[in-house]
Length: 430
Image 1: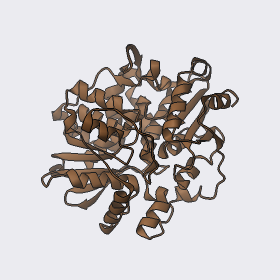
Image 2: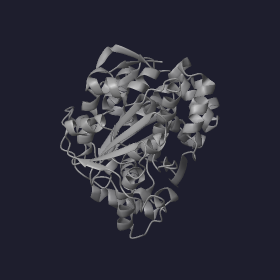
Image 3: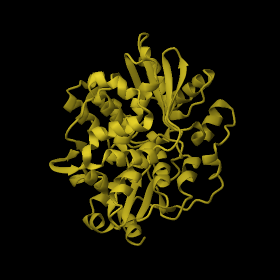
Image 4: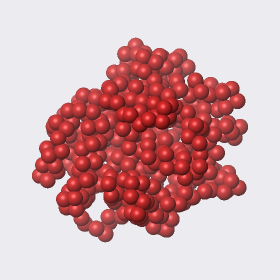
């Protein structure tokens, strides 16, 4: 597999190099040179495969022979060693696709664990220590921390905005210790993301500390997420596979990127909806063609509190390469007030949702037509947002064991201002 740097197209790397580097020159994202396509005559056979084998097949179409198929299957089996995603039908033309049945109760378990297992495979003959530096707006931190926890020769440093993720999200990854170091930043997620970019731009750190990023800027995470779009399609009755609309809660836009790659492969998805909260840089851009990020605001859907989404250039590149019209992409932003209303509406349909899925649901029901079938993605377990959900629905959610086991653990995070020199000193002295 060959990939090019979106900011420096002369930089060409292999899949292995892209996974290990994370970012290219000038902090550019890597993107596949070849966009493989599944023959329509083969699609039904692929959809009939089990989740693990199908996922291996899909990934092999991108990765090629860099990782032998049997080895790739082992990586996938270890990565996705938890309950498969599940379709939950709400009515005759709308379902939720639940992606939160992994160890940290969020869709990001798929990408983080595949990245961890892939790096482990690539580094098995290399004893050099790797420092994984990443920023999180909530769920990435837990997924990455648990994926790399106690892994040999890997140090993980996770930055997150202090006071702007849920208490249970924080407990899930800031209480592990060992090779997991967490740092709360007095600022927004965009401040955290900016610190990560500055670290990757520091030649000394890149050269001497084996820096890598586990954000969705890492291509391995994006490719892993392609797999569950095929799983969603396979779980639908054939009559509902036609004119399928998928509404995606969007923060850094990695999940949407993966969905578009699934469509590019040949999955006949009619269209996507990019669903955001008040941090609406992309919806405004699609309306007026002006990229003007505003200051990030805090919302109850905190994993989407991102004003400068890293993966948007990949979204644009897919549309450019495939010659698709951007007008086919649905979009919209949803306020906290409307989010709460839709959490209540979903509860009246006997479905308990958290804020991010409720946003995707609201925009889906607004844009879907009678002859279409819609899926909105459930990206996190509602208990991760227990405080909000309990208050909105006047209930008391019970905690799944993954959260209950961490609820009373002591936070181990350091706290700093968004100052790169402070972060660099921490990295140099760890």
